[in-house]
Image (tube, rainbow, N blue to C red; front, side, top):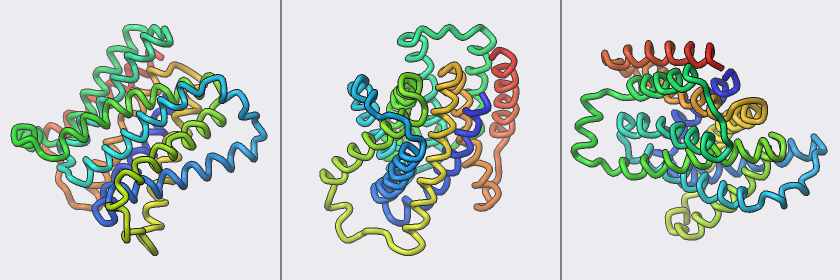
Length: 284
């Protein structure tokens, strides 16, 4: 569970700063710069470890699917954050863990005990309450904001992509699994970039904003590394649920640095999340 929580810290930081940077340089440039950085670092880790990469050829199908779903998830997620409102995007994004847990149970045959399942459900509900203002959420869904469909697609994509990353980490070891996932995913981003090249033309980020986009990639790398190690070491379903608390990091930063004031349902959400994680930890 601890690796899932570390992953949540990385993804929460990436979420917050990704929203800030994406609104300045565009969501597509943000994700391409960030994920190019993670692919380069992952390649360096593989070279330094000396782990053989030949076994990747035995799971090329899973690598390709991971590239498709993860690239789609990242692009749509940052697009949703760019369009907003965050009150709608964040709670929907947190549901990705449910998709991954179902796949872990069906495909990997994991059988979490009752405490893990109950703790997972309480945690996810808590995260959803913490990451939004219920009044804004109801209003946002009623008026169908432009970010809503992008958020739904990204939640499904992250759920499937997260499960496939966990599968690759188990089959190949976390170092090679992470490397294969990042490189294949980068190919997916480049395909998207070619398709949407008009959006990229003449807008390459420079200076501080380029460094900020790389910082988003660094935070995301912390998340995927911790997630991969955790999935390799234990139950995928537990790591998925623990990592789903990442919106709490973005909410905390919004309160601390943007001066946002929490609403009553967010306090309830924090309490439920703590209780859920305690139950999950006891059942793990």
